[in-house]
Amino acid sequence: MTNHSTSSTDSIVVLYKGGRLPTWQKLPPAERQAIEQQHVELMLATARQTNLMRLEGFRLLTPERDFVRFWAIEFPTLTGAEVWIEAEMAPPYGAYGYYEYMLARSWAVDQFKHLVTNPLPPVIPQAADPHQIPQLDVDANTIVVLLFERWQPEAAMLTPQERGERELSMLRQSIAEEHGLHRLEAFRLIGMQAAWRRLWIAEFPTLAGAESWIQAEVGLPHGIYADKTFYLARKWAPAYFASWVLYGENK
Image 1 (spheres, rainbow, N blue to C red):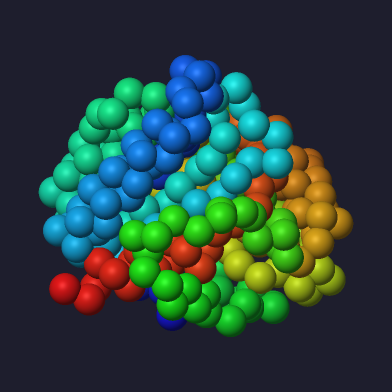
Image 2 (cartoon, rainbow, N blue to C red; image 1 turned 180 degrees about the vertical axis):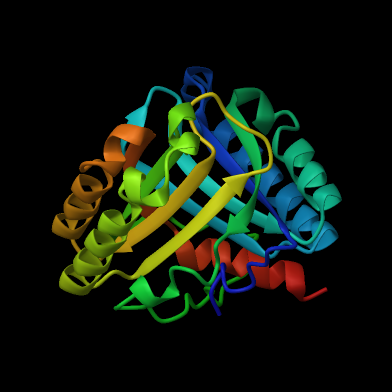
């Protein structure tokens, strides 16, 4: 089972930039452990309440101040997303967190499937009880590019040919084949951020593939018509958080 296999264009995806505030590190280790356990108990109960469909985390290779991890969290309804966010920010754990939430939907789900030349097998949830928190770490076997982008206003007045969309498509195909693209998916915000409207997740087996992908995305002519921000990341404890989804399903 994978924790992002049930994505649907009708579901709601919470895109979440998060981390721990410096005050968290000032707490005694025993107090942090107790608060973390209380938080896990609450969120697992919330997973069942909201019919959690997906919970996937990424840890940035280079944290941006309090922004350390990025999450894609999927629910069948907007109500479920609202309940989850409220639970996640609830004190005491929530009092020590950095939270930046955006609501989105999966975008162009079928359009880019042909680019995935080296798909990974499904993530198998860990067998242990998810209430018992294991030692969490990244999956160092792959590298993930998180791309936050939007077209610049003048791009709407240009044709796809003028924006260089064909050139970009050809570059993506070439890089996917050369570097064995594991995954490519996109989300579009329901609202709009000043700096971005779409999120892309591209996963490669090596850093060389990620670097080539980034260079292609900023190339000419398409690169001058879009604002793009990139982060390199690793998947965060995927088997553990896949077990949260399984727990939410097994009511």
